[in-house]
Length: 119
Length: 111
Image (cartoon, each protein chain N blue to C red):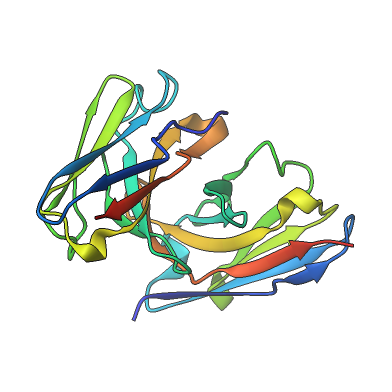
């Protein structure tokens, strides 16, 4: 079964750091670009970051640029998001999502992990 | 990069058809045939319903269809069913810098 499972969410104080992980299974992880997409409570989806299959190309939304770092370990079938200098507005459910074969859409999503930034 | 514009809510009765619009700009929707649509039920992860503007992934009902004209994409759901009640989001490729932009989401109520 094709599956993405996020972990690492939790409660963190403003200015703090957190590292999210996404474990992939059921497909050849190293062949796909991967993304992080977040959803603040009661709000819509927001694309956060993308990383190509070999990590050659990395992109960030302006809202997280300079604070978040996306990475992957193809040997471990894992995607990561290092989040530093966290702000209240980063509070959200963070989903990892696979781009499809042609990079046209997000065809597989994890169940999400909640990040709460609060003092 | 601003979010794509969707109506906040739409509604319809069982068996009817509804259309959700998604308006972007010439930098995203208007420039690329890479609009996708996602269905999200409360507390669940989004599910891909339409990609490349009008294509359906395997397993998605043919009651769901997509189209695009200029800077506006549309999702049409025909033969509304109770289980279609959910939030729907459009998404467009927006170039090598911004990469992806989502719409604000539309809540579909089946009356």
